[in-house]
Image (cartoon, rainbow, N blue to C red; front, side, top):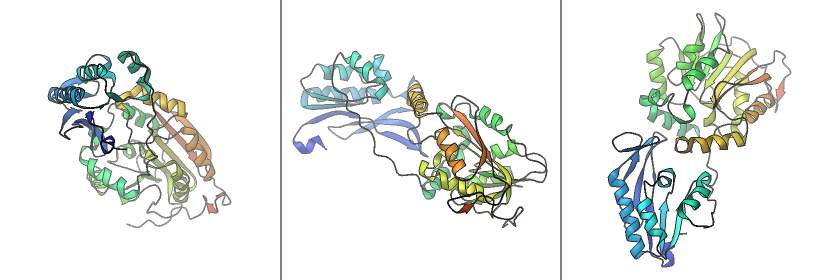
Length: 367
């Protein structure tokens, strides 16, 4: 509901997110009375450093000026958001302190983990209302392709950064040690990106194939690894024949699926694996919902709200339901897990009417 349509003068600030290539790179500050916007913070300097952001002094001054004007003119004052910077006396603190002394109705947005701290900081016992976002629609193949096309040029800059991807290089190395292709075997990397993980897994004589939704990612991979066989595709539609691969791997790509798509993804993995073949999935995963929420709270601003990170038991269950055997989860870092499994050698393993052991080993692959 827009309070202005109810005849109530509204003032204060909103802090819309700035996205580049699907990643949060900063925030702007918007004066709710005038609609004027200014940069508030960015992941790149210059500015006042705080956690992973650099705050613009001009943006902060504009926000506090908007809150001060709202004290004089508005019946409803909004501060989006009151967070860690305000709790140490920075950010919007001057404007919020002025608002707390006014008779206006105040609306503060606060992260759930900080509600009690903000109440104590503001010396108020105001009610808290959970504003859960409606469940997002799964990012489809076209949206995923567009996302990775946009970030292809800077992909390596995001790798091993802060937040859920921290330590990813070490996790890639630990995951690669879990699988050892034999000379002459075929390896498929789903979401191959620039080819970094496939290069660590492949041994001398391994025939490497890669699938990725992004043509620009594939172009970068082709330039670095001209001997790889690359195709456009994704987990739910692998453009390769049945039972053509001895090993299927993937790194930090599975979380782009919705949980309702896990079963289909594993059925497709099973289709392309040869009997007795192994799969390995490395990703940001959590042992339980409680662990995922604890990580979200601990990482704070570094958490990526645009992603839905899998739960390990859900991934294991989907693999087994699709027909995999010997499914094992391996924790390779605080936030990263590997799930491995094997395709049965028998031809009667079926789930949902689809045989995991169908096809012919070494089927002809299109060039």
